[in-house]
Image (cartoon, rainbow, N blue to C red; front, side, top):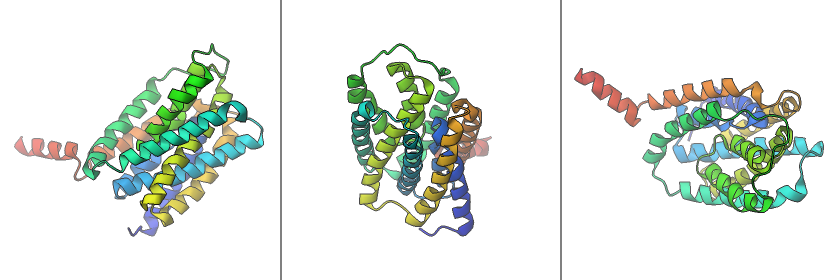
Length: 265
């Protein structure tokens, strides 16, 4: 697929912003995935290309936190391994879906994730009571969220962060660090499937990845000072606007229904 220079620059800038957001609170895919759809990229190729830039950004954020010795490798690596497996399973599942199904459902999934962001409980920077053991978290929660990341993706980092806080009782900063490790793991798992299947648009993926890495490095540093509440309202607003744009785009069932309804009147 040929990508115009102007489109490539816009998508790269979107990836920069998404990498920044994702390193702080997760949800960067809420910007990049609909942007790829709006640019006219094939749904499966959009998923695959987005996964490459997301993997680059999340891995970069993990590196930034690891350099400051904020990753708890002893307890987190088994969860990261099962998150990787979940990402592989999710990506294998999405390759079996029809393109029309992907185009029709993605806007609704984006709105659902944005609603979750808006209604999710406020996370405080303090320790909570643990509700689940690390063993069961690794066995059920990590691969479950990893599977979601492989089959769709946006909001995965936030889901992990909420799970670490509410289920394992971690304080906010530690939850951010652990969620980045597991998010990077399931990203890489899904990416391995997409790369093997040849669905990635490499020139676009590399440009977006470079910008996403830069954004993630900036975001990881801001996360140490400001926390995830910095960008939550903006992220929700932009996500909803992009979802509406997809719903009203040419060829989407909702847009076709609206046109037919208007014609009847």
